[in-house]
Each structure stands twice: as structure tokens, then as C-alpha cells.
Image (cartoon, rainbow, N blue to C red; front, side, top):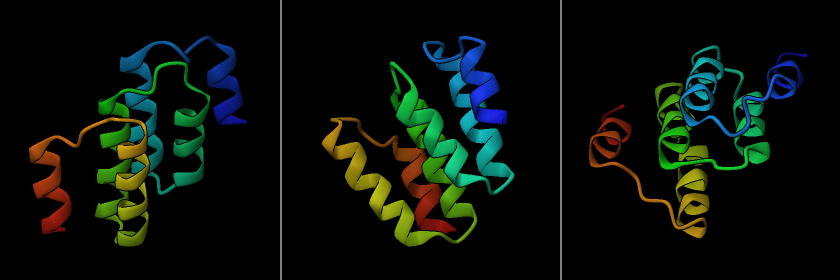
Length: 90
């Protein structure tokens, strides 16, 4: 219910709230909901994707991190250098 409820409230186009939700779901290890936020978002930006990548890295999902990096490249989004270091050090 959580993702549908939030998307119904019109959070789709608002980057800050979107990034916070992705980070929140990632912190709670609910990666499928975090990924759904990005899939249904009108403008999934670099910050939102970085939140998901770092959450996966912190939880030891290294293959998912590599998959997300590849997907970011397809969407022509770049990874922030500090986030890259954090992902590598986890």
C-alpha cells in the first residue's frame, strides 16, 4: 500500500520527496518499493538513483549495485564521486 498511496498523493514529479522516499525504503530494506518509486517517477534524477545505489551497497547487495550502475548509464545519469567511494568502501 505504501508506494501506491504516496504516488497517489502526487509525489511523482517532486525530486526531493522522491529521493527521501527512495532512501527511506532503502533504509528499511524494501528495495522493490524503492525501485518502483524510480520506475513510476516522471523525473527520476541522479539524487534518487544515488539513494537507491547507496542503500543497496550498505545492505551488501553488490550485484544489485552493479546492475543499478548499468541502468543509470543507460539513462545517462552519472554517479556522484562521494557516493562511488561510499559504495566501494562498504
